[in-house]
Length: 256
Image (cartoon, rainbow, N blue to C red; front, side):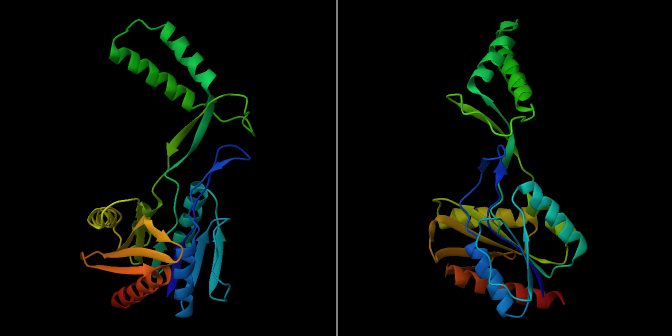
């Protein structure tokens, strides 16, 4: 089988020396990739600079990205040039990327100037003026290569990133698609409920739902949710990897 796996965590640049990122190590993605490789499958592994990587083999191709924008470009290219039998989208993709930054002083000055010209001082009128000013400030281009630290507060404007998984099914309608959903401190019932919603929304074949509070080293409680509602659980990264590979192989055989 030809398998595409994404793993690690994207970073979003604030300036040339600073970034916003997450704590994903890519260790689960590594375990999944190595399990597929042991079974003789070909793996294209899309990952980030600081994530762990699978042991090199002839059947493994590693592609590197850093930002969500780069991930989107690379995924678009791969999905347009190859047909994958299975796609495991385990990468922790940033929900937001940096649009611009301003100092506290700049925000106060901008709001003060706008409100000084205000004629409608109703709550709705003030809210409209503030929203327009913030929208204008947020659309300013980030010019500094390194943002000055000469301010007590720095305000970052973050814009919502596209959901990469939402485009996969349209571009690869026959692939066995596995999505991931990470929550923090919820009940197992809530975890399954949210995982199923993710599965349905993105037309996945499976979703691996997990809770950050149950992840400690190799101990990793995960629930694999099937499209038919069935669930299977695993308690370590290696067990999750075996569970995913076994189900992708079985589903792939049914597609043939």
